[in-house]
Image (cartoon, rainbow, N blue to C red; front, top):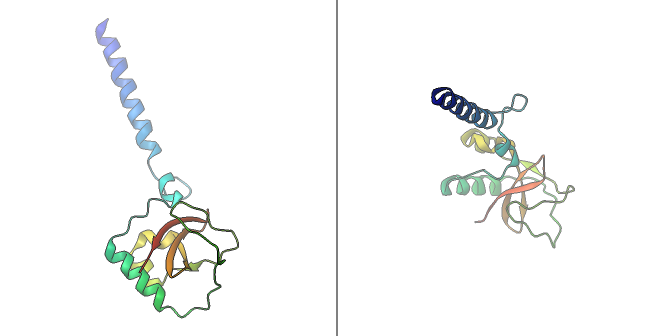
Length: 126
C-alpha cells in the first residue's frame, strides 16, 4: 500500500513543478513572460547606462518638456500625456532588452518607460 501512495506523491510533485515551469515560459501571443512585460526587471550594467545617457543626450530632437512639478521614481506612473521617444537605433541593437521601452527626459535624467503601462522602468542620471 505504501508504494502506490509514494508514486502518487511523486506524480503530484512532478505535475506541480511542470505547472510552475509552464507558468514561467514565454506567453504564446506576446513572446514575453509576465515579468518581462511589467518593465520593472530591466537590469542594465553601468556601461550600458552610460551608453544610453550619452546616446540620448546627443540626439537632436525637438522634445516637449515635461510638467515642471513632475516627480519620477522607478515603478511610478507617468501621465498618459507625456511624450515618449524611441531609444536610438544603436542602443536597441546593442542592448536588445531595451527594444520594449521608450524614454523621456525629466530634469536632465533619462527616464526609461514601459510605454504600454506608462511605468518608469529605470532612471539614468549623468
